[in-house]
Image (cartoon, rainbow, N blue to C red):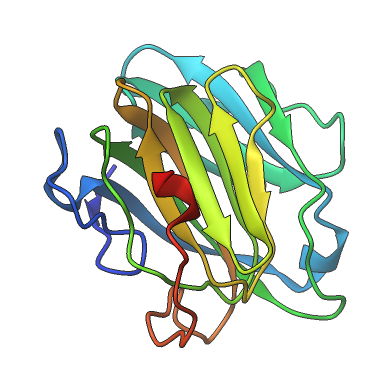
Length: 199
């Protein structure tokens, strides 16, 4: 499974703990014309080592992240994929009817205190927390996410800045479901954060 380093808005401004840039990018995969039916993001743990590609079904993505192998799919609530152990369902994902989307899955490992630059995505961003806590600032205010919660979703085109809180590094798996044909991330937002997550 080839991976490259994501070079977009989710890069932290602090020094990452393990990965260069803090984010390991699996690469994009087109969701297709039925993206309007995407109800949620399903994470399924396949196995502890490489070689689990046989469990991959239609529309699913296999990725090695956080020291294990995962199977991801976007579909209706309660959906199952043979060979996988359900870990979390995150949704519903706010998408536009009739719009094609591309799914980009990433592993994110940031040290305590790291921040992303203010950025946007042309589609929802969702993540599953395996460890650590984060504070997300948007024009609407701030919200918190921690390991053990039911994931986190940010609607598309919403300016945001993420800050890693507490004393443990953030270890997450991230989905950016962006409109096909557009950049996955943008840094040209004119929004200026108020520093709400630094309080």
